[in-house]
Length: 350
Ligand code: SF4
Image (cartoon, rainbow, N blue to C red; front, side, top):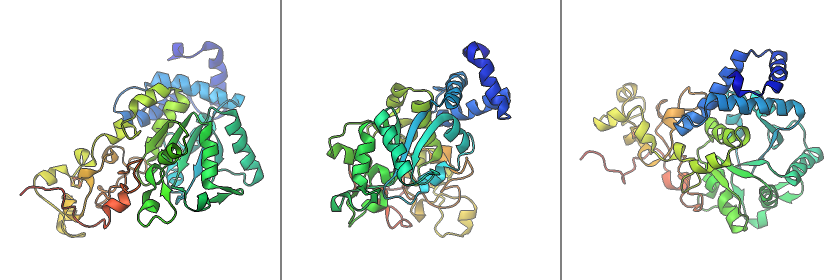
């Protein structure tokens, strides 16, 4: 590892670590966590620990020098659940991400500042360019965009401003990908996803879509690692499928990796919540599980730092990762409600 790191900066870097009470071993454990967070998603050792160590060292020194990759986190029509989930990351924790990996110059929810100074910080970041825009929530386009008003501007105007100079845009969560539940009929706010909105406005910027409700924090982190830590847009572009989603996360169905799959194959189903079949961990298909039609690796990554996920806790998958970025009608709420109803389009057994 030592030869990977520029000797001139090593002693300074170790001083920084020591001043924070972090040992060299602790630092390498952090690098392994970051590599694993992205590697778990990519299913490959694309991000090796030494590469992450090298990039993170530069990032930490950048933090001290005041040169960190800027990130703007904006919210449209959202419940703030994606931000809330992101702050629950434990490994690496949110302090490490916010203090050592990125410069979060604007967040509707997390920024300590407010009002004029916060808007000014955002404007300066936009003017300087070379930042990542994370957008959470649906884009409300009705009433000329006045369904959202911040600092005297419409939500749509603010998104166009922030997107115009961004290096990459991350649509975090199904609402940002295609409007989510706000876009379900009758869609009075004209809700849609970021990619569709920017396309309509003629703004040609790369949008990475991370559907799920809320956006899985490790999936968002894996994209940030590619752009911010590794500074490797090509690596990120290679990951994307036809929906601009990281393919390593969204190219397989939940059903493929489900812990209850054996029971599905054996024709053993839960028909009543609280029944003996549920206690036995049988398949939830008869309760309306959308796992066979929903693409993501929830069963591998899980939520809450690998604690659990919907199907593990006895709740059938409600398909929240299904969101066509360019078709608001193909969103998980409109397609899958009522949730606890068996999907008859999928035939099983006889
Ligand atoms: Fe498939 Fe859902 Fe049954 Fe799991 S619980 S095996 S995802 S139908």
